[in-house]
Length: 115
Picture 1 (cartoon, rainbow, N blue to C red):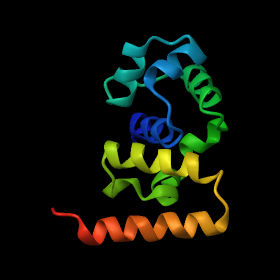
Picture 2 (cartoon, rainbow, N blue to C red):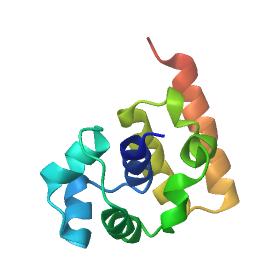
Picture 3 (cartoon, helix red, strand yellow):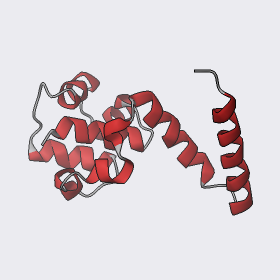
């Protein structure tokens, strides 16, 4: 299990920066970076702080492949995950008709995009 990757995935899913987690936990951003990149293994107490900052139960970090099941993050880059997180955040304010319109526009853009 790579706890740092799991933490980073949940943080990006929620649209938060390391600075946001730093403010919520009091943990230094450089320490959070070391955890996310696998250079440091956090204590259970530290994990509890991070879970609280992410509004997650501590057990969520240990759920078998929970994040990858939720968003299939294995195939998403950080930029793609940030983009989808923003779409998710703003789409909650849309009604069903507007969501369908947005999806149709995205399909049209994708069909005409030059790769």
